[in-house]
Picture 1 (cartoon, one colour):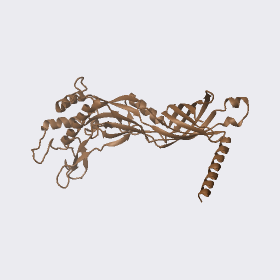
Picture 2 (tube, rainbow, N blue to C red):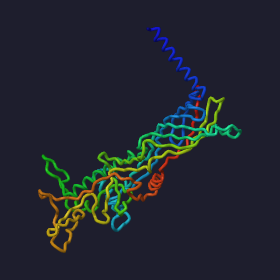
Picture 3 (spheres, one colour):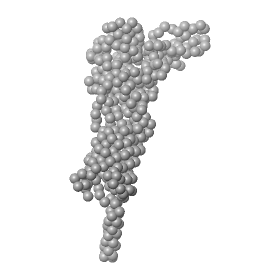
Picture 4 (cartoon, rainbow, N blue to C red):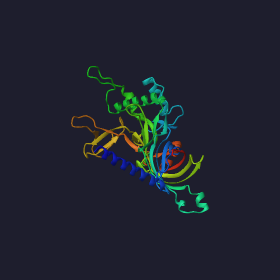
Length: 388
């Protein structure tokens, strides 16, 4: 029995070898190239082998080095940087920076700088067809290594990110502290409350001063209705954004040319083409508030009033004068337990490419580029070594 198994195994091995030799004789897998690649998809490596006389198959991996590009956003108060008079040296932001220094002890900047970097990486599977090898004349032989390529690149949808410098931590911490204070003031809550210690309240004049300033954050641009888009730090005191593509599997189309070197042991290949994102990528940023402090006097928190006759509800800025009514009168809207009801703006995640009009030139240039980038240009150079 053992001899029979050995005999059958030997027959199987000889059959596999014979089949492999026959396929190699037809140009299938008769050589294997290992290459290193550099270009617009980053740096990486690839493996290539023929699957016949006219077609090569390649697979590989590439990643984009984490090059960094810097940009910044102005800090605003109540959606603006100046007071109503715009007097130099007495702007709202300058007043607020002094107030925050007294409150927190931090030296607070009027601008937040952020770093942008690409994070994309890809696997790829590409098929290259050499159509001129069908012909047998002088010019086709010279251009026989010209190829048409189709395939795909596969990678995560998140292809870029932005985050604040570590040096901005004091500024963002102070902004977070102020916004927490601003919310408590507008909601008529104590500055500090504990079950065992007495409550701590701010002076009423200070409450009105803080309420009149508005929330604090970095202005990104404006919504279609003119309201400001203001981003604030998250619970960890960090500003973050990300660039997200539509598809994880990205079809590729391109052309290329190869030159054999050093008695065919080395090869130089140039590929040019593009892969499809699956629609324009999105530039997403979290913790964005829609504010209209300049127009209506409130942003994060508003006071609600109800007409005693008609039941109509209106909103005003905190500590604003009671709304006037032609019929009945307005009183603060309360819940079933008699507590005032407040209007609260909710933070949201927005796409800077479609949801707002970005006003800063350095940021709008990036946004305009991403809006038009439905495909990603690929220009790569591969230096390969033939293993066999």
